[in-house]
Length: 404
Image (cartoon, rainbow, N blue to C red; front, side):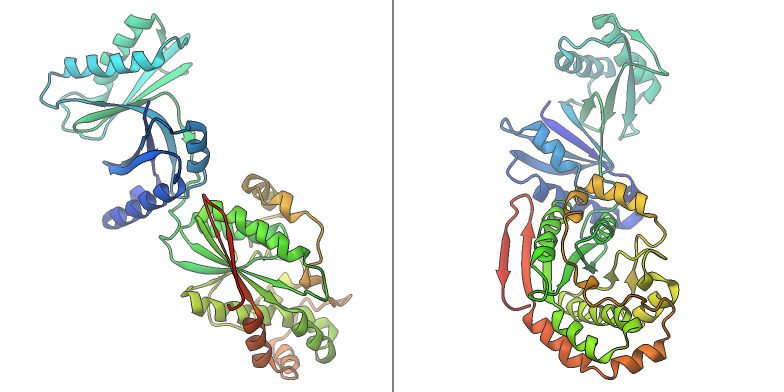
């Protein structure tokens, strides 16, 4: 079986724009399977075929395909070419022989044939084709047909000049292919929430530029190392991640001297968003993304979120806003970021945090507090001192530059 058949779901609903989404998914599949002896990736009548070379490792191909957003499901498949002018019985004989050859010594108490016609011009309906192919398999193997709960389902998909057959499906990531929905900038802490927020936007077709704020040398480099590890994991899902590492300790120290303690966290977050918005302008991103959840911490009350968000004009997307911690943790474990996020570190958000932060800050009070700070100068310095790192998948490597 030298093919993989990839099916998409949501893309099929895109009407006249569907070819563009399919082309993006084809491009991502080629990049994701680089180095695995995948000879060709081609769209075929509502599906995509990956042609495997003799050196292809199916387990490696499968692991890569599970990460690609836009893939509904996929299967290792056999491909049978036929002449559409041939008699249907000859076509069924040809397909059945190939199926039986690949089944080999496989045993199943019950089975069924499930047929789909991609080309409806084929002269027989799908149920009739199922009886023809199923009858040939039953005669050769002696298995009992069970249409309701078969031990083995033999899937057959008929196209105009070829047919694919496979014996099971693997679930894909779903959603839309990365790059189909534009760019966003995601604030990435070392915690559990923000990597999941970034991943959820990737599944919606967005390419996420990551921004991490740190307080080194006031605090250790641990949060930076965690951010790099998280960026590597996220690169597996969007193939290329860019991480901005932004120093924030000087800003916090100045805020300590000028901002009333209850408002410090709100001021920190507003300046972070302003810096992220500047970065968004550089990378042509159309929105900011955070891992905020309503009511989770003091800065995430509705009142504070409104005040914080008013610092920038870009839309702020909060894909986790209505989730609870158990749901987010489960997704982090599935994503592979949870083990990194729980490593102890010193997060800049905890530096100089007051014992009783404001939960219902008023915008006029916050703006008055900010007026005591040289906000624009602080932002310019933070951006000038930031570094940028690139992470790529399948070959993940980091390239560090001193200028953002």
